[in-house]
Length: 317
Image 1 (cartoon, rainbow, N blue to C red):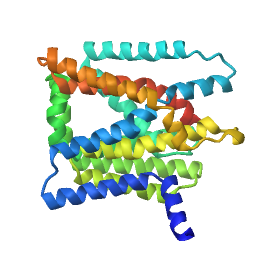
Image 2: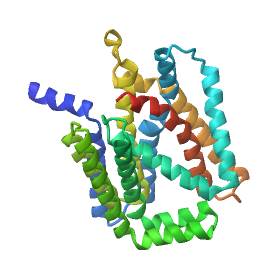
Image 3: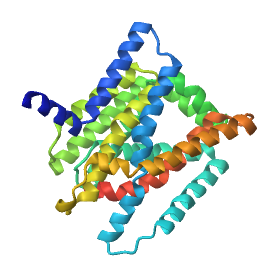
């Protein structure tokens, strides 16, 4: 019985292994069928989006409340919601005024957020901050540049034919191998310099799982590749960090990851309903509007206030 229980327990404690398994299964289907049906890609994407992607951001109010308690400040859910929506409104206006600069800003903060999640338990020094950003930039570059053919039309529609942005992307796509190697060397150099200044414990098993996820994204189309990394890796690790943050110094009230995930369900359902309603409105009244930029802008609006909240979590690692 123990021989079966221990692997199951380890799998529950390391859910990213399930993500890797699903990624391998998807790759097998793609190999057997010679391609991956769009319906399968969309199903895979939606599964991770609503099972982990949106829920890991739907816990922000709990993080904010816990932070206020630790700082001995007053917490108001109404004030938190108002600040959250105000941030989205301001960023939405920025997208309207300058979509190109807004896209650049979103890519930069995404690179930082990915890096601070993937390179955990490091001191908050300038060197390690550079290493985190370079790792996040490398991950983002792998996702985008290895799917350049799929990204190009999306990029073109988002920047609305801005010549500078188009030239920048075309250069990046043409010299993708050089840029990926450069990002990798930049990360390696910043990591080595920071490690010599401040030694950290490296979780080799976690690093290996990240490598497996990124290798799988290389062979999969853009949509499932993004879903695998964002939902199957980043969101799951963020869940783990949020769980540790919420139960820190509270050994008598330790909550399981499943319990914490369940607290995100109400907001996840709201997001699902709002998304469905938005798609219906677009199909019924706004088909003249380009859907891809709207979808991207919506995702970035939801992400930006989440990054601000997660800063508290990552500071406590």
